[in-house]
Length: 323
Image (tube, rainbow, N blue to C red; front, side, top):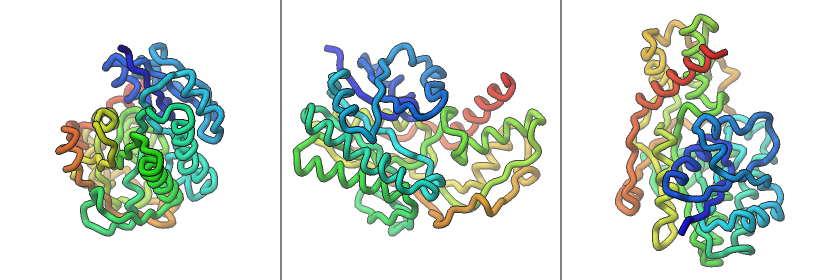
């Protein structure tokens, strides 16, 4: 029998890759779209899945629309990926971030509990919940210490998922995903800002790239690998929480070096540190231990940071050439 899945945040990076992955597994895929932006569907077009999924207008701010989305989709699996997901914006819009990223997840959980408590639920948790790290390497037992309104909102959603799992016996799992990138990443994120900057500098359309803290370190993987872990969690007999990461950390400085060297340039000739891009509270380093995901799910990262960045630079060069 064909299985039905509902993805909130279907127009985002992860939503598009997950939609493509589920389609390859034979699912009927429904994507929730909140009509707030201009062209929000470009990622689905780029992966050639827009015409293969059903778009449902709904919003994490509106519980009734989420219940209707579950009714229309008849989903057995619900993937809650929607969020105000840009960390820097969360300081400028903390209440919106709390409503969408935090309370929005709770509304989706409530919709599942009310309409179909047998549906399996995935919550997109984040490594930003670790924030001011309490352990050098973070796993499922590491205490949380979020350092941004985004991290705080994600932590609310994370614990709401656990609470609904324990209180109402939902098959609800959290994927604590560390940074994962791709050519579909939004231009406001540092990896895509770098790959787009490299493409424009390489083509002669830009002379410099302004960035904030170059010494911040992140555990970067490829989004196409990470969405497979989401699906694997919902195939388990019992729900649980899993760290999804590469186990390797790289500074923004070294990431820039990789990106510029891919086109034969020296990043030091073009990157300018601009204090305007520093965060009010910085997360200095994140590195995840996904041993549980490997042992229980059989998942591990396949694509290196270097390969991911090269993929992103090549995609942005093609985009710049089309402009």
